Length: 286
Length: 286
Image (cartoon, rainbow over all chains, first blue to last red; front, side):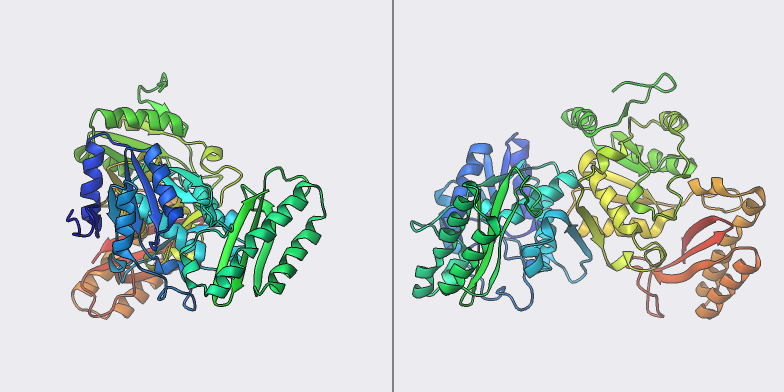
């Protein structure tokens, strides 16, 4: 596990080096926490690592921009890659191992398998990014089998992704505990996201309007207001504020992500909208 | 782990009992072998268990007639179930634990995930049983995650299934070694199969013709004969002998199961044909 001059955090780049390191942890009887990321780390990711430290003895973080969860027209090529900065940040919060698998080792030219999830994966992001959750489920399955963690931490920022991962872990009996963590936000409420780096100064000013509208809808729903009216108003307000198109603003069952009705106990409000060339997503409990 | 009066082999029927038993093996540092079956055990299965004993310290055998790998018109309901006899046979060859999961625990009413394999799963059985390999891959993934074996043994009788399992284990990085075992045959060459029990006495007499024809084709190919002519003759001879329809008799690349051509180094000859209401499959190396 050679350490970079810039950071003493050990980095491994292939499966045999990862397995050797993890096997060392295992033989010492250590409980292994895991935080899978696509890098370009921010305070939201660091909160996941800090929480993982409280749930385990050692924390493995992966950084892998997964080509299978990007459609050809999406931002795979321009997605930010900041390895040395990521390593320094991870070192500062006490991560124990950084796993940076090579794309050609993750997906050799002969590759024929995938994990498919229905249920919570079908709509919302599943409608607008049809291959997205198969790509997510397949890479998370691979990473779980590679790292074999006791516990894995995901941010609620990608709430639907969290539910999809929980679903296949439950259905396919993976021996790992999946834990979600609340979204970390800027002072104005904007959810932290690596993609916020795409926003111009003007767009960045406008971006916080997304959570403002979600909070307004949630307040209306809690006080018994008309749900459809509140959702329509939020979409109209986002368009008027410079967002567009608004892919969805929807009220869902928080566990299954099925359409919510008057009987649904546990509600989640989820939204996706474009601001210039950047697609923002956010969600809150109601 | 209550033992039946008929057999001292411990039987478990739910995941927590299984995990408790396997965890006991693990804590003793024992290497775990696994033989997944659909029960109705015969000498072919017992050969798998005997081989598993040579590769591991303890052998777990599952018996589960998996509804997800049967189409509605197929033989799920009449598939033979012989639990006590299976337990006695497994005891006689030294199996250490029998896992008999309940269908409603394997597939609760809310179940949304599957494992999908392209490549070796696409044709042959994949053509004639379109949902079959997704059902196989999903249940084998579940069983592997439940048992967490070091090594798992499959019969070459279901050669395409063996390649499908090897494929998703490789692609999705499952930490298990998959081993194939040669097909066990009756004195007249008929491959042992739980479905042979469906054959009438007359059909049983005719059934060995399948391997006779496969051997004839293999001999012709080895001696440089015309492949298409040999394959056509085999199909015609099977139809003349009372088989019908003949789903396929095909020469394939033994690793990828892609169509073989003159350059293919490693050949496998595979066939599926109906005899009355029973569908027989078989395959041999060439």
